Length: 390
Image (cartoon, rainbow, N blue to C red):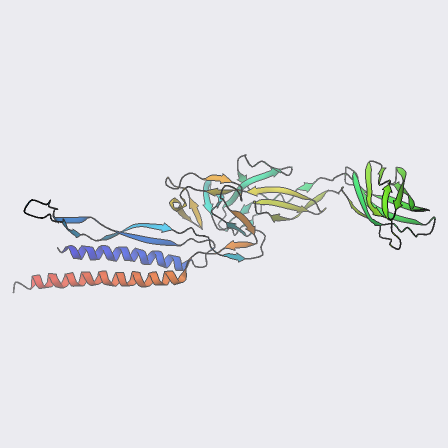
């Protein structure tokens, strides 16, 4: 049989594979974090019909004569170029800016993904749409042990941040130097004990003239007094008052005329609080925001990188699994070791280039047609041979 007939068949098969790959790319043009694939061809073995001849004194050398036996698919490579960003505004949508992969667990198997369309399940675990559980390091008492074993990233929905006892309070603003002698100003601040019980600390300022003010502090059980002296509006003596274990810092107070703006700016205590929401940092840290205004680290998402990402095997559901040629996964925190950073409220779009894919469709179609023509031409030659005997 004619060798060209089988060459044409190999061409049909190879270009059909190219059509399949291109069609899959186009079908996934809107798939989150999809990475396009490309088909590479190579020729098959060539039949040697005449070997090479070395040059002689009277005769020149001759080149080998070979007839190719067709084409085959050398490989299908994955393009891991970064896709564009698509803002979603959803806190659990996470995009990797860089070369890293999310680490997930599905049915006991460790998989890797670029698609960050996550959500929390009924147990508070961060999961993919297919149910793969995102891996990382959970915080213990607000501390993340990044060198430890990774586990399921879990949002502690029932967690409570402990109450914090008040030990400091700060004041700022202005006490009027032109106030009537003996006039008073009262400023209250809510403070907390170790159990989170609130009580009121009252600070009473009394003008004693000549740029001086007496201050009395009362927290309901303990009282203490002090004095403030201002020169040309600036505090020159006094500045702190200790009331029942709480240090009131008044060094930012001023004493100019015409302004009565003295106020308590802050105190460092808080009642116990429950988790109300969370934010995501670029280093993958989930920070819980609590009802009492406190913040605490919940966990940190782990990322993985590979020596040869092209060696990863697609496992479906936008997941990959490691192979012998991808190398072992190197885990780390986002923002380190070339893993890339994370962006919350956004997703990575597919990196499929439609203009290139439609061009590849045309190339594959014409290649298929040309190889089909080889088969029909070979058939006509065989027909001529059978017609020799009539």
